[in-house]
Image (cartoon, rainbow, N blue to C red):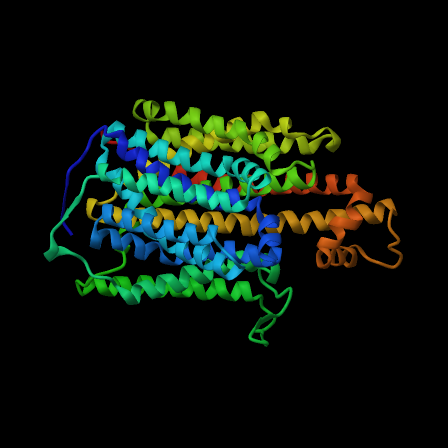
Length: 532
């Protein structure tokens, strides 16, 4: 497909409109994470159902992301962005006015998920098309930073709004910001697409990708409940119990998801060979810069998402912080992200992007080590201020690594495949976040209950005669809500110690993840310069 595009160099109004849309999409989930209990009471439902609604949003978005990227080729980036934003407004307004959990699921999970899948690839493509050289690097850096900052400040905004107003106001505020973005979307230049070269939708490829990504993400999200390999509990659908050699349903879903993605690649290669329309060109992965950059970004996203998931859990459960205080404790990370965005675009042309990316990952690795250090001493001395230096290093590392990875991956893609590259990058972002929460959630909660059980046995606080550590652990897991309300106050120090030791274990896993990304950046990523 050939496009003629009016480039608007240094027209920062375009970036401003994009950032408004990105901010509401990113803050959507993080702000609502701290409002679950309020939603449960207001809609007369339960915590598991609300978490299921949130997971469905991720599933819908991940499944439709590659199709959303292709739509930008068919109707143009500007139209895809506007249509996506309009659909997002409908979904957000539906969620704000929800009378029951089903209405919330339709508005939040389904409609917003589809809208995000249409919008996100278009957003990245608009940035690539309308900025060049240093301006593009700066725009991409600010984009990555705003997205990360929205993730970090979400709990603060969500906690404050939910506490003093209502969780519905969060969705209402998103509608207002989205409408403003729509009003000023005219600053985005129009795409001029040659109708004769307009691509067609590869529906077979879409279903392969949708089913593959849906099953992989669903498997990751349910692994903590059903097990990573062997089944922890039976999987039931419509009253029928499904079992295959005692394997976990999550493991089976992930295997089938990978199989569908393998069939997708085979299908795409066949379509390319026959010169037919494809969902995306598999040759994009042969790009020696795009592939390592996107995988480095994947591991960076896993690390950052893991930190943003586990640290609030620790602060709220071990330190007794509320959502607002947790968000304030994370502010050094947000500040470091903002600062890094101001200087990274200058340094990226003075030094090679590879050196900058490695420096960012080393800073991230240093931050994780500093984050683990409070867990090596006296647990009673830990507070939110114990992590200030760690969050500063993590913020600088994430700000640099994300910005450079974005620029390297998307600036070196064939111009005709930039929408596909944007869609793949956003897909990897979703996979990284889902995998991180699944893996680290399993590590954190599994080890917490194990340490608590051992602490109960060692302290003899409860009558555990003839009960083994594993029996106590399973009892705690099965009665977690009762345990939190009745048992926990009696053994607060045991819980704090268990959370602290588990967080150190989480830190080890995070170290491994970011180290893999660092090795890719050092030994696989070519040492190239960004074009001015």
